[in-house]
Image: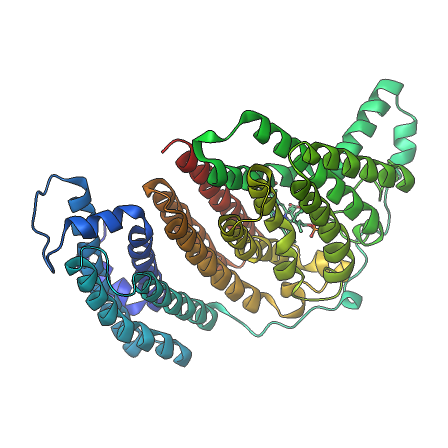
Length: 470
Ligand code: HEM
Ligand SMILES: CC(C)=CCC/C(C)=C/CC/C(C)=C/COP(=O)(O)OP(=O)(O)O
């Protein structure tokens, strides 16, 4: 058990702990502030700085809790400033912290205005705006300090530096042809299943279902859910299949992908193309049962992933992950369109969360498979800009994801369930990312990758329950 003086020393001597703790505290404040409950609480408690009224009332407890946390966070910010001024820190960190120090009292003043106007101040969104700006400055300071303490000047890799991964691929096709018919058939069916990239499906389908739940609430029909998931699974399968066809030559060079069905000749290329076309047609027919916009968006998603991402972005630009995130964000628009027949602002807000989450998700794999990607000749962030920069970008995109989720909560009036989930799983994701900076191993990158999936999965589930049940 640490004594309070030890905690104090760890905080003051360790700017990363100080910045990390304050960032988390600000995030908790912002998230609580974004929920509808605080609006009610401000209306219920119109005195400042102390809340007067019935203390056993839940809204009063939220208001009081928010104020106590705001006070504590102010103290943490001052302690962090002290740690930065007197600790071993990157010079760059000073500027964002100075901005946070200026904004914090303004935020408190606006909080007071919120209370005395019973939750209806002149510019209502300013409180969230200031809160997110303070959060942004702390995330930036944390990313820079992590870079300063754990970074190194790593050189970019070039594909010609890497030796070829698969000098000798065992001929899986020959082995298969010697097996009994039943086993061969099973093997072939599994190969088609692999083409569909089944591991991506659960999360992409959950994105669509969350968008549907936001659009329809408790009126969401089972038929709509089944058709959307059915069309979605086939569309993702089609995208994955075309991706396997287009990448079969580079997949051969990478150890992660050199056992794929088209590399090992388990399936002929022609069959895979026909399979992809069949899946595209089937998914379009299913989506058409909902409406034509959903079907059109499904086709756009398949085209975007198979052609724009796979052929244009992935082999040519370091921004492939960022722009490619649009493919994964499209299911949010598909889900919204499936219910409403239109593209709505809430669907776009959910799509934005997925879009900014994608680099925080994938850059972990770009680190873990850096040599492999270099061998394949892909200009991934870790390959062309190095590991230090990639780790920094993970922190920045994670911060952006947490901020975007908060805006979504505020905008859609989601309840405490999503707020508690984003705070809880978001802290785990941030913790995994900070550990990645210190450990710099493959295992740490996979931990952060799984944390990214757990984050999005948990948030989406919470949105579904919140929108349908609460
Ligand atoms: C540019 C965008 C993206 C890239 C480059 C990317 C890349 C990858 C890669 C290479 C894998 C395979 C990991 C492995 O081989 O071990 C993977 C797994 C996965 N991705 Fe992504 N991804 C992207 C976007 C998305 C999106 C938008 C979603 C869903 C919303 C998603 C969900 C998943 C899931 C669920 C897995 C499987 C995780 C597991 O098996 O534990 N990805 N991703
Ligand atoms: C609804 C619908 C049709 C959605 C399709 C969008 C889709 C499949 C998004 C997945 C995101 C993505 C870019 C994964 C990585 O592929 P990668 O090529 O980088 O992975 P690899 O190296 O394993 O091939």
